[in-house]
Picture 1 (spheres, rainbow, N blue to C red):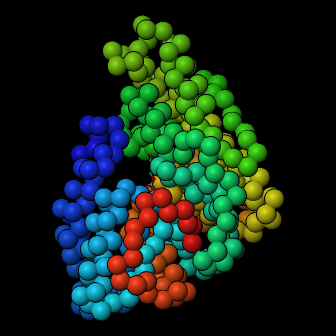
Picture 2: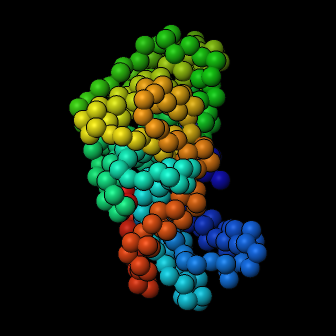
Length: 304
Ligand code: KG4
Ligand code: ZN
C-alpha cells in the first residue's frame, strides 16, 4: 500500500489500522483456548508514532479493557523495543545497555532498572533504519529498504567504494553518509545510470549496498562500544528493526565476544505486538492499571 509512495502515508496508515484491527485481534485471540477469558490485561502502544494509528489502537484497547473489566497499560513503543530482548531471553535483567536501531531511532540506552532508562547516545539527523531506506531508494531497491540493501549487499564488495566513517563523541549521524552515497552514484556518470538515476549495473548496486551497510554497521558498533566502555556495561542487547540485519548482528557478537549479548530473533526486532506485551507486563506490575481514557502521545520519549 505504501510502496508506491516510497514511504508511509499517515492517513492511509490510520485508515488501514481501522480496517484491520478487529480481524487482527480476533486472529490473535483465536490462538487462546478460551479467547478473551484467557486474557489478564491489555497493553497498547500510546506513543511515539503517527497520531491516527495510535488513536485507533488506544481507543480499541481502552474499549476492550472497559468491556471486559481488565487492567490496561499504555506502553512506549521504544520500551517495547528495549524489552524485546527480554522476550528472547527471560533471564535478562537490568542493568543492560541496548542499541535501539529502528526507522525512527538510533540510540544507545541503558535500562538501569525496570522503569528507569537513560539515553546516552542518539542521532543528530537520520535514524539508521531511515538511512537504509534512503540508500535503497538511491540504489533503486525496494521499500522497506533495510532488508533490500542487506540482500543486495550479500555478495557485494564492501571495500570497492570508500564511504565516510562518521565518528562523533556521544552522537551518531547518517546524513553525511547518505550524501556521500548520492555523490558516488552521480560520479558514476550518466552512462552508468538508469533513466531513474540509479546505478544500471547490478554489480555496482551490490558493491555500493555492501559499502554503505559496512559504514552504518561500523558507526553503530563504535557508538555501542564506547558507551559500553564508559558505563562498564555487563550485558548488551541489540533491538529494533535494524537489529534484524545480519551484518550488524555478526559485528556486535564478534566485538563483544566477552560479554553476554542478547539479539532477539529477527521477527522480534521489527515492530511486533509481543514486545508491547513484554514491556506492558513489566509496566503493569510496577504501576498498576492506567486510568480509563488516558491520552496518546505521538512524541513520547520514554524507554522503560
Ligand atoms: O523497528 P521497526 O520495525 O519500525 C520502527 O519502529 O521504525 O524498524 C523499521 C526499520 C526500517 O527502516 C527498515 O528498513 C529497517 O528497520 N530494517 C532493516 C532490516 N530490516 C528492517 N535495516 C537493515 N537490515 C535489515 N535486515
Ligand atoms: Zn519500532
